Image (cartoon, rainbow, N blue to C red; front, side, top):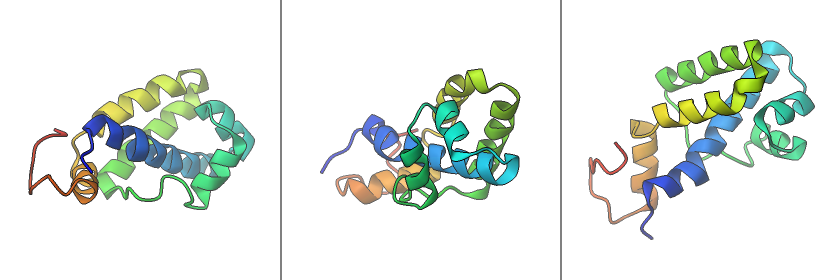
Length: 119
């Protein structure tokens, strides 16, 4: 099945970012699942599914990407009202990364090697 880069973002990147942000906010800042849900604009059950790897678990980030996500978590702690803006900016920054490109190639067998579609 051919996938547009935007589909990969919606189906894999954004959920994976939410997963990592939820983990950071709960583990490092003692946010409750309810608070994380409110900040990220999702349900508490979605947060629970992210934490249990039932959602957003297919995309694995490398350390550099996880560091960027941690920096966004730091920003959210200081400005919860801007969480949506921070999430949007992070998703733009993580477009075309090696992790996302590998996942795109895995799901779209018509792509060969280093395709450059996502970048």
